[in-house]
Length: 503
Image (cartoon, rainbow, N blue to C red; front, side):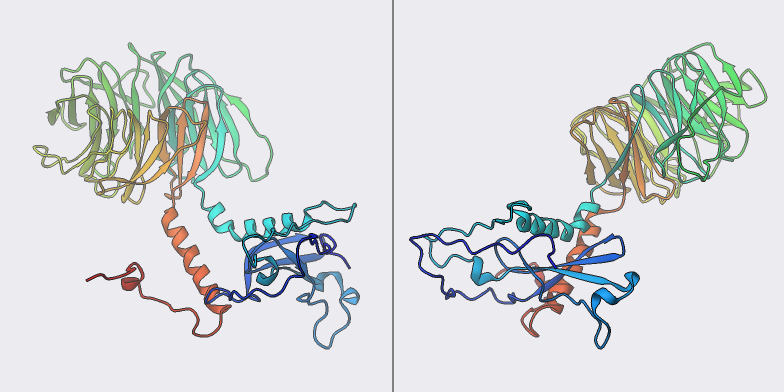
């Protein structure tokens, strides 16, 4: 029986004497017959192949000595039922055969002279085995998928009830409801004629409101994702339309009632059952750029304005509560979902500022890692960060309240700890353009970003460093298991990073 190819013939050169075992000894702790099980299993028909790589040097040699073709005392392999047949393929390398004895020696060329097979079949098989050994790191890459729009993505919103539901709005007025798990569009919401500036879910998760620069706000019904797979994309019209006098810049829904607030020339409070605002707030700002309701005290909301102001309002009173004027304009604001008295603002002076609404005379934290204007935020608690090289367009807090993600005009995403001064992760791709909006998933496992290249991208939010540390620990454990007793010395974390001490 031949697996993957036939053993290649020995290749020698005329000026070379027959090879003798080299005088070099393998490195301490490394055995020539050491087997390292790879985390790779591929099923083909009724046969399960389990690949293991033996440590050594040079290209791979295929060995059938480790094949377990029959159980002890049982029938031959080929007489077993198909569901009991197991085939173990071992890629074997011997150091003495592939290590140069002297510098003038030529490196052995591993060729397969069988015309029916590729010349480097065994070398390719060894490369595949090494790639399989790196699956932990491959799967740790943050980018997961891209969901395509027909224009630049300008707004995102996640469902408060469903983890796999995401709504995105584009510059051409199109809104899409996504089933993220199956990477498909459930509905295309048609109605707006200009760029979408904001989207917000109702607390029941069954309705969404959207605002646009076409001076309208529209109410939509959100369908549930069907269990069956396949394309279910259909167009849907709005349930109700609210007509405004000016273009809208932002929108946010009340956490408990069927009301929502819009930001524009003034702050308007709307009800689902009425076609005109039930109340309006203004305080000396030409344009209000964003509005956010407090997640704990639902009647309190905050806004940012073009006059460099941050204002706090209460629906129970007719006048604003407090107003803060900064040196540069703030473009967006976000409340901490776990510490609702803290909020963060994105400022055009390349900083993020965290405030306690009870003590506005001083920022609780300033994040100084950006290098250009901050455009929008959906924050973390008392902390502010600064790592980009261009304007920060949007920020969103994780549901855990321990970190937030920020999107930048420099085509990158960064994840910050709520009280950290620098980002712990930086996400970008070669094709990703200016990022306008970003959101965390409802379980804080993924991050969504919308960019000018007409894509909604899905990223892993889990810590890559932790993933790699776990992979390193598994590697060390396997190295100890397959090494001679006592050959591997395990150092404690307090001594592991110390190389030498000089006096």
